[in-house]
Image (cartoon, rainbow, N blue to C red):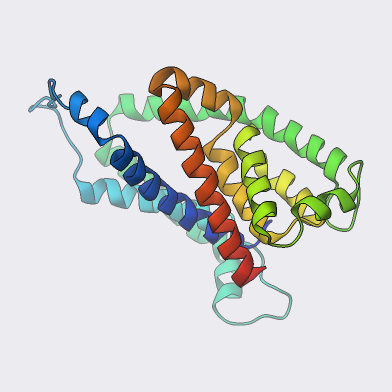
Length: 254
């Protein structure tokens, strides 16, 4: 809605593709280590426990995604006709209907303890994310401004380092994104400010893919669990894939 549907779609496709490719590459590179860990006990769920079917879980997730899509559905351009204006005019009716369906699903398919845990987790995430999001918006606006409104950091600096669609611009954006810490959703106002200051669309996608996947604190925590070698390999794969995705996206949509 803010950065454009093309960039949003590219990020969604890139994130799923990255997950698959990164997992396959890590398994291929460290298959010997994985083989040594496969010997052990396998957890089996309680036979008497009530389990949801794959179809029920799929419908539940689909309903959640549709609620997100319709609730955030952007207003079409003035004067446009057809399907999109019709959907926008009915977005809240559709959203309410989906919420009712979601409530029925929760009542029929989920236990009371699961619903309680869900509400508690949602409230906890809200308290954790909202202050960071609010602070991120203020800092991004103060340092980077927004399209057409320069701020403290000169636009020439941004455009000279991250403008265009060169390999180095995409690589720099990917490395910067990998080292920076992005709280959930704070990457949106930051990226909006960078794009307004002259950042290319390819480097923007590279940063948008590498940023949420990695951060310096994230690397340190992963390193204590996976070890330095696996962590370095994982980070390298993410940076390379983000750079490639940025170059490809910038070539076709830049």
